[in-house]
Length: 262
Image (cartoon, rainbow, N blue to C red; front, side):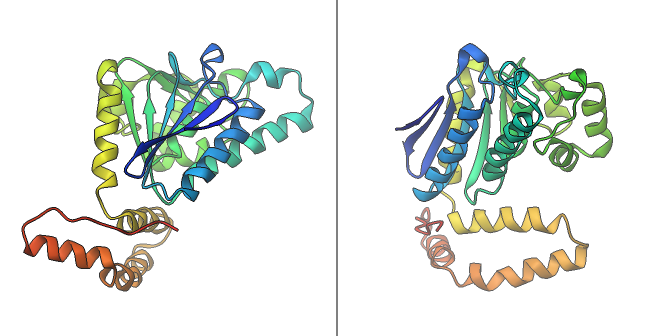
């Protein structure tokens, strides 16, 4: 386990790593030091060739978002620097080649929801609250929320959430596609670990390619996106992992994929 200030990176084995936010007394609020540490942990996971990266809070919150107590004493330059650091950490997570999963153990508000939105998948405990609440304090979601949320739930629903600033339950979040699964709180870690093991058993390069095609393709006209998909086929069909997958299928056994994300 590698420690950074207010953040830990845990090696769970089999290419699975978990980032844990460790400021429970501040509801894992994103202060200057913690977001620098978060970005460093994402980089370290990549350097270790992570196949799956989980992100979880400690205590009763996933993250309450930007540390407003810390920000209150800043001048404009300091506030902008704080936002830049938060964006850098969240964008680093969003750019990760491995599969990323937000494990929402408790409330996720403001930047906490923006952090979750940067992940590929989101699993939430039953009964928690999520939301982009910045409009309630005269701001807007400035760490990617105005762009990522509409891409996840659609523009109309995203606008309702952002304009009102009202949190929603994890159950409602599931109904609009904001989270992928909702499970009982006592089952959350077991479910996240099971999903991580399943994802880690897949071809790392195939999953990375799926992520890239989905994210890049959604920004393109359909025919251009389909061409992007076709252009990616030689790399995958010529890979060692695909050869192993075909062999395993013929031999009626589980494949053992060996590709590493560089």
